[in-house]
Length: 255
Image 1: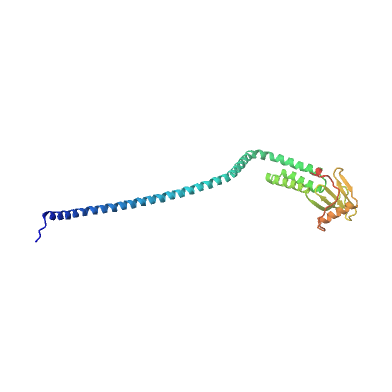
Image 2: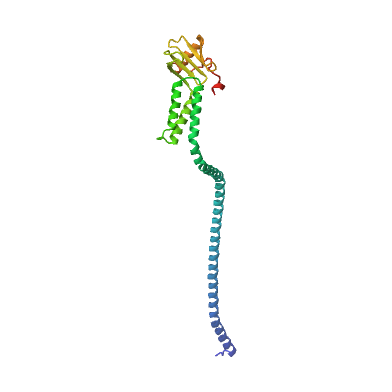
């Protein structure tokens, strides 16, 4: 029978005790390693969340910069409009300030305009003279009418002036009594305020009004033919064409 030496028995026992003691230490290290891993994971998550937050803030910053640039462009485009509106408002404000003065002066201005219109008709070529003077007389009566507003009176006055101005831009033809020759009906042809002519119904006689002399001047046969042509054009009996006629007054005098 072999006997185990005492020192060997003691060494084996010590090893067993050492191994038993190291087991808790290894468990503790594993726990610490796991805790460190969890801490690292949580830290990484925080870093990832922080990165996402930073990226979101950068995106918002870019959008804010783009919106700022759009607003700057819009403001630059809007600035001239605002300036014009400001000027318009200032003009209207000034207009309102003088409105009372204008209302006070308006009756006198309208009377002066009617008087000037009468002088114009009296000094102009005497075509449709009675009709035009009757229009002026009606205006003079309307100025003192109590049942019409200032706006209505002004509207009628401006319409009369427009009618007179239109005479200078229109061609016209009508039948009427020859001035200075009672009961003699003729056909009239008017070319603005430059030419005024008459033609007897048989087409054999006619004349042109001479503004400087204030009387009719007889037309020769070629001119009579041109007057007949002008009357047919206005009556839509032939196509428009150039007319070769003597003038009643020059363009400078007519204007």
